[in-house]
Length: 501
Image (spheres, rainbow, N blue to C red):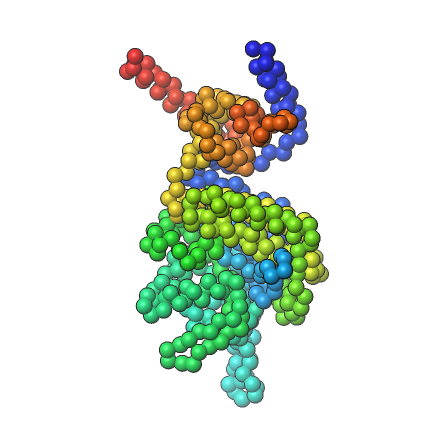
């Protein structure tokens, strides 16, 4: 009895101390269909975060979606031939493939439109200039055919892209409101070459030379065939396509980073949507274009700083452990791409920050690397949520997360010990696998808990003696859930008393 009292006293003291120092994030709604943590806006360049906040306030749509898509749009605008060396023989570009995941009506199209506008403005100027120079050539005022400059494309056939990429070795970017349209176009050719198109796009993810053979014309050799993609995804629709095509056995789907949009929030039409913020970002994109034209990104190969290189090696080793122990095959294949994703994101973020500051540096700092890793840490959870639908996984961790959240709310806990979940949370009793630990880790990442378990020499992890502090905002935000859970439990108890011995 005295041991229990001492343990509770220690827990109270730790909790009081933590309450004065903790900076809580907003707890995520774990009762939503697929809860995911929010994007850390402080990891992005300040103008991007400011623009995202303004767009989100005016529309009610997900602020993380606006910020991430604007960043990836900038990364994709960087010359695709530019490379960052992670280690000898391991180099990555800055461009990426990103899928924006949400059901219809969640704001995919408005978010994409607001995020691509800056690159679109530059592309429109390129098209206008190309039309003018082509007209001069047609009129006989130019001896040699000028380049047709165009960075954005709608037609995703390899022949159409090849023609563009011959004149635009900096790379071409695609924007699709729905990824199934893009995948459908690749699969539509069937025996006429759909499989070959998929193979070319697999190469386009990394860039490099490609030869496109044509039935009725001479082959085309493209020195740099690289494509950046931003596309919307409806997870249920994609899941059907996923199953019909064998789960993307060639790895095409798995090359997409995925971000799941949060449900729409309150709209405020009176919110400030400053023209200055948009103008600032347009200037950043324009500087990237100036550096593309001047060859700034390709003249000197970027490199990770030594401490960032070590950090990347550690990350790669951890990912290999995770993928080896991930039972869902397609998710494991996707997670296997994360070390490359991290390199691309760090390089792209570095280039964008250089454009913000007006000076290009070849070394990518540990600070930039760590911020890219924080962004990818969140996207890891988004991948789990999306692939749970694509792989139709059991969702056992999510079940325990919701069960623990219900116990926290119904009991009104401000702090608790791991054993309390065993006693009061459904399905926690008798669990000896790693699922409860994964559920606790996820509750911490989703902003519900803080781990206040004191370090004990000679003991491993937290296990049964773990101690946790509850985010006070959880009780405020989900009070209706707490009332519902308490009412349902009372009704169940009364029904059992009436019907059972």
